Image 1 (tube, helix red, strand yellow):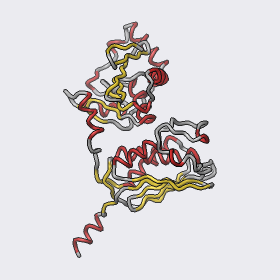
Image 2 (cartoon, one colour):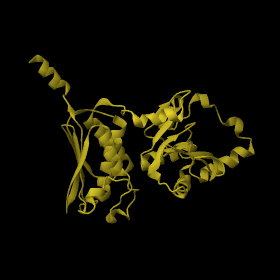
Image 3 (tube, rainbow, N blue to C red):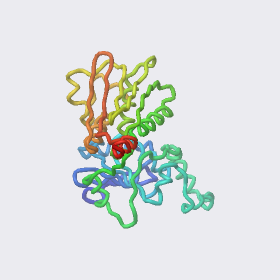
Image 4 (cartoon, helix red, strand yellow):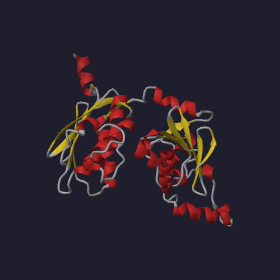
Length: 308
């Protein structure tokens, strides 16, 4: 790591440079390394006396595969928002290179091209890993402009909570093909930030899968503005309950399992930002987490009310 200016630190894997910026008590990453450079970021952040939970945003100057895998890991692990230029949104989400990026054939006879490709391949940058959720910026915008997102109201839409939940469950089933998830999804309208709420739902169902034994199923119910997830784990100890929505808190029973102690904290933040609540009921045979938002009247109810 090299400090190039006050609060600006350059990281490198020998091929790609990316920059960590300390801004208003938070961390912003400009560009990103390859997927296997994640440990490098962790060491640098720790050396600054900070933690990865302070990572607020990742700003990509381009959305090629040498950046997107790292950016997706940052988003999924810390909840950092990933920003890309409006022209690169599709590339970031799909991994497909747009026509404006040209062809690589003119570089194939250059030795530097092959050296770069070899290093990036070893760092995991040649595998296409799309970014599931991105925000876009336009020409002329600055870091200060992007930071104001967190000071303003989330981007809310009227959406079907049952369909959002179904989408999150489908994604999890693709990632964990043998996962047993039973769903009971009743039509339900809410006014929320859809990307954030889908992320929260995914975190809750993923957490339940982690604690449910292979011979049991996670139960997911949506009804009247509420999404509940029930697992078949050992329950949550009384001394852990007050802390489970804190960033980086990990109960002793969870410390040998994958995760960074951020999943439930993100759920709590999403609930708060969308005028919702999150609650948990627990016992020796499992826990039920409930994410609830003010329900909206359905189209049928509105029509019936007007007729009266």
